[in-house]
Image (cartoon, rainbow, N blue to C red; front, side, top):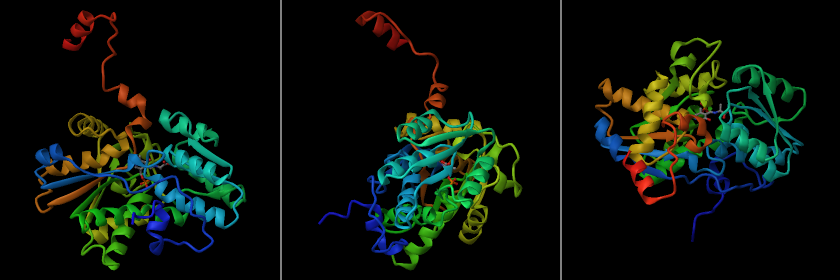
Amino acid sequence: MTAPACLIDRYAAHLPLTARTPRLTLGEGDTPLVRAPRLEQETGVTEVWLKVEGMNPTGSFKDRGMVVAVAKAMEDGATSVLCASTGNTAASAAAYAARAGLPCAVILPAGHVALGKLAQAIAFGARVVAVRSGFDGALGVARELAESGDGTLVNSVNPHRIEGQKTAAFEICDVLGDAPDALFIPVGNAGNITAYWRGFREAKAAGMADRTPGMFGFQAAGAAPIVHGKAVAAPETVATAIRIGNPASWAGAVEARDASGGAIEAVTDPEILDAYSFLARCEGIFCEPASAAAVAGLRQRAKRGLLRDVRRVVCVLTGSGLKDPDTARTLASSLVEVEATAAAVRGAIRG
Ligand code: F0G
């Protein structure tokens, strides 16, 4: 017998489902866990695994939580959903709302959402509103609208989102046979690190794992409120997905860090972009800049000699590189255009 195709069926025993919860699915979850030999070589860690969450239906980990949040919204008789987003939550909410037949509104920080994410929200038929603020201001507006009955909020402050996202930790334990020594993960609004920590604790309690990993979260240096213990008024980073100054799940991230014996640290934009291009060119995996923050953090800790007692690590690559074509283009010089002859093309290839 094959495993149930639907994420919420596969982990039903660990999710807040009832007989009335619709079995909504777009084929989310069950994403590849891929070994990274070049990173192993560089960092000296015996096993480095990449959880490729860009393989989810809308190209990011958000689909795991969104399928549960939208299914529960349907069960509760919601008439519309809304969210604030740096882009991926919006793309995911728009897709699952379309599937559920619910109208969706997404509130985005004007001028700071990667092109692919915007294209997705538009294609899935969401009402897209850009506000003149960063993500934190947009989330404030979304909360206010939800409180006054304008729609069901599907940001990660909706507890069903965290519940769905924790399934990634279950999958890692299932594939590896145990939790890794350490998990490396980017941190923005801090919902995902909160979700993984819950997932690993539940996996241990349920006998899917013998232990829990150290949780290592990474913020961009220009948007590192948890690292500094203080909200950042004007966060700035090339990794627009994590351009957040006052994370909603701050307390959850601190708990994951402290209870697991982990750390939350900053990586610079150049470190993020270097990891981004390393992953693409040396491992053949194209993730978005925010995802590369986790790998930038791994490389930074390796350089600082802080990985000596870890043997097996997992880095969470939260979203697909195709989300952000503009950043990809900055890595290359201009494209070469030549006459359509073998000689001209050979000359161009040889440079
Ligand atoms: N990586 C990507 C690709 C993201 O889109 C996000 C968050 C994160 C990492 C950080 O996860 O917020 O749970 O700590 N994106 C949100 C959004 C904020 O609106 O799409 P987090």
